[in-house]
Image: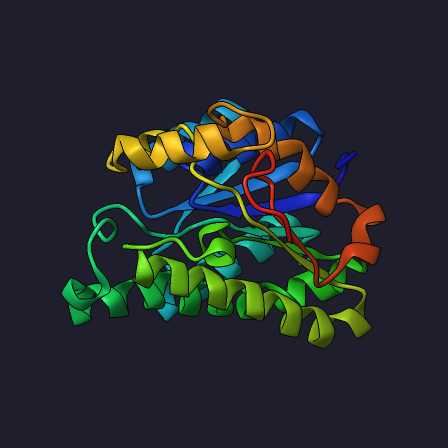
Length: 245
């Protein structure tokens, strides 16, 4: 499905990002992996024969440096960008009145501004490929309005809105932009989530039970393919039917 297509995945050193990278490699993609956790990112890239580059999505200079590395690695043509890098651990599970301003601002810097800047930096490479695709990893918390998680939920709602605007701006260049909205997945990064919230998802899905990260990879692979341009601007809740868009 992705043979010969170059794909950049952010937040690819662990959890969902690492699963996405493994799945895309299985579909034949040529990968560049990026993560702020350099040891984990390099290990993930080495295991897949991919290129690794560090990135701090809160730092515009770091994002620009990553884009330069990607340009060199791909010959100036990038077929896909997966904006997966984000932060959530440690900022959830408290009432909105108790969120610290700096905590709120950091979530928005990484999850919202980082997604915008990463897409902006990659856009020339995506346009040059002639069939660029961007997949933004949002969250179904922004669809159903998850309580006690406001800074994260707000950031992912912004990612969904940006997806629609970017689809219109990049569409004339045949660059498609979509978003996926997983629910809570069974990864180490969700260990901090209270068991009651995990159970809520497990019981409330149309297909009951926990959801592993690998279960959404094939959807993302298709959205990165040449045949997915007609879906541009769309949000796909990949959550086994916990919420419907």
